[in-house]
Length: 141
Image (cartoon, rainbow, N blue to C red):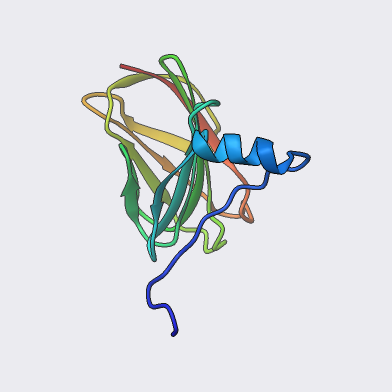
C-alpha cells in the first residue's frame, strides 16, 4: 500500500538513551504547528522559539507572510524578535503581519515598519540579500 498525503515528524536527541528518549517522547518540548504543502512550522515551547518555512503566502498561529519565507520567532516575555529570509532568492518583498499590537524596539535597515497598532506589520526588502536573514524586534501586548 502506498500512503497518500501521509507525513511524519521526528526530533533528533543526540546522546540520549532509549529510556531518556521514551521519557522525552511522553512530554516533548517541540510542538508541530503545521505541516502541509504551504507551511511547515514547529515551536520549541521550552525556549519560546517558533520556526517556519512558508512555501506559499500563509499564516501560522498569529503570524502571516505575503510570500514564501523562512522565519524564526523568539518570544521572551513581551518581547518578540523575528528573523525573516527569502530562501527563493527572488528578491521579492515579504510583508509580515503579527496579530498583536506592539512597539518597535529595533530593526535592520532592510525592514520598513508599516504599523504597530492594532497589529504589527512590516515589510522586508530582500533585494540582493541572497537568502540572508533580516530582523526586527517588538514589544507586543
